[in-house]
Length: 625
Image (cartoon, rainbow, N blue to C red; front, side, top):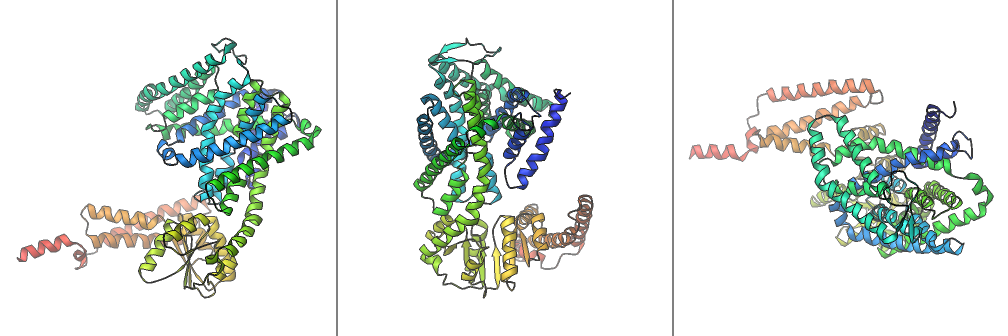
């Protein structure tokens, strides 16, 4: 029974259900959860999965194929072109230097030059899943360090495709294809012929994607059968992968190109939504299979060699990343975020290492060692990020504080402090200043602070949740603190700091949505402002005016809508944790709100309602004349 498909499915799913939530709870990525699950059930630990784990890998690799197709779909050529200098510059510098240094290290310890270079290419990649998720959670994706990380990762994701095409050329002067019953090419072909076939297949995928796939999807969409569209999307991915397999190339190569070709089509978002669930499931299966194939006894035989290799690789990557950030003139704090966040080996290395093993560029021992190095480097990254956040950055900020004269002595003391001086905060600051009200401005992005100072804004660098910074900004004398920070977690921390150390200050907090606003209200914040509410209502007011409603009547209706919505939110926050009751209450409040607004419209218009509209006044004046 233990060898049956259903039993194996139960083992894999149970391991994922237990380990992935545990990894997320510990602040790690889901990728690490899947790897841990695979290690636990693998033949080298609990033994629930044996040789079939390697067989399952061939099926699970299709998840990587789908991931690359969806990455291709997400590549907006316009955005890439706008960021081309940052993407190509940072990515090229980082990958070239890392590959050369890592390959040299591998060659020194006895690995052949071709294999060392291939392994160096795998090591040069960082984890898109871990880095982007961490930047989003900490609200630093828009910082200079976050933008440089995004640009470098984008280049790496694109570089995977030429790397997959290059690896067969590194295998040998005459390319030996792995045994494949579907392959049309002979087992041994010249390298130049393989390259020519590769380019021909790529051109075919591009042409078919532009001129054939679009019309087919258009006809399928006319049927209005979602399951048929999903089947067509799967057929597109499978067919492209099979074509690449027929000519001896990586299936991921063709699907990535197909995704890029369809990135600007009208079916992009539908393809993403239909294939997303398949990609997630198969990718999880892939990482589970990778974990199950990590040879733990091998690591136990030579733990010293493993630790030295891990240290050397991460030091090489960190040195190159720091140099890259310095070339792009990042400040030290942003450089630390970039360097430590990107210092691991990425999940694409698993794909490349598997492909290298198929091409016999790496023997089984070297492949197992490479996969273990990748998994462990990814596992310790969240720990390094925590050390950076808790100890390195605060220590660095103190040194920066002593070096920067403007921050060393905040000689301004105003009744208002504004935390966060991005688009939202700067709008508030400019409005207050235009009305004769000055404030102390704080922002945690040092490069943004420097840019704003060049533009004439006297902004101070620092984390507004730090008590010493708030004291330097005059929090003891201030009357109001306005938080324009767009991270809910950062706002919650700031509220706790203010309530504990400066309880006299009135808090005016930015909220992303209704649920964020309710959380802040639970913390007894004085004023909460949903960033989309006023703008949405103002748009609706202008639509009413365009349709012929009087300006004052439309504006009054907008104010009443906000008033009723704020009153409803006070009641709804009491039941928001009871889903069924909350939904029922929302429906009731919406109906009540509509009845109140209808009653307002039924009231006779005030005699001066027309005073906001110039056109009726002109008509009245013309009649008098």
